Image 1: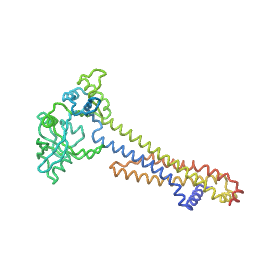
Image 2: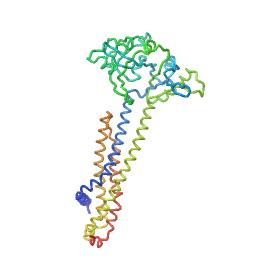
Image 3: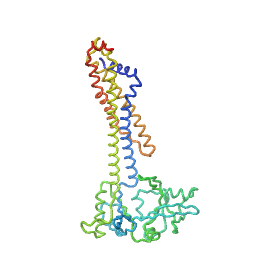
Length: 406
């Protein structure tokens, strides 16, 4: 019997019981849509996280202070004064895999302009801070090494600060804003970056020379953090190791003695987030795969019912010359078509769900073409595998007994 005729017979048989066919396909639809959606959402989230971290600089390395312990209790790092500007100078002078480095100090307080005020954070760094942290200027200019040396009262402001201190659209450039009691002249406006992967607003920031923040606002002689930029992503690991060696030498730590600082690279965060996302995706796909097995069992069950209902039809076909392999193919085609239709519907639903989630979370929508292709093949395989035994049973029926079946 020709393949075209087998497909037409199988399609006609399925259309006679549309509701039953649809209910049978539900397991396949749920399983395939879950697999497609989970893989696409996983890849979209990974791409979104990568983009977010890349916007912060994938080759950025941060050196932070160790937390302080008292009586076995972690009391944070606020009073830890182990990091100095001399550490930054040593890294700048000795590190071969570092292109830029800046000290960093920060404090929070009230920003005031006229009758407007806004609770904000002021970050202190040197002239390389913008490039290391991937901020760009929308207008104005960056502060200079001379401003850093003189602890000049100048600053750069983010878009959130601008919208809250200058809500009427007034140009902030050249204006004087106060942070606590200290006046700062706005010399630059930063372009918007939006929220980071942790949900923090990257535009709610004021950047000033670290010496200004250190001396005029905090009255300290140490720094909170060191930020550096590796020459490239490929040498980030080498740069991190190099910084660690320089810091240990600066802090006169003996071999075996624990570091009083921590070195973190953005690439490590990227790898960690990617691993977590991949593991969650694999777990969810495995759970969704159970639905496919359940759907396959449903197809087997309904094909058994179909064989029983059409026993006389099978006997009639055998009596007019149909061979065992023709009967086998007929029921195999029915189960395979049933599975493939369910798979196609599941793919459409899965991609639609993934697109909706990506749009809601502002992630890039990613379609995993290999997953879609594999899902299509799996649907056909499920239809054949779970339809084989009922089809074999139909093909092995004795035509005389089948014709007598009531």
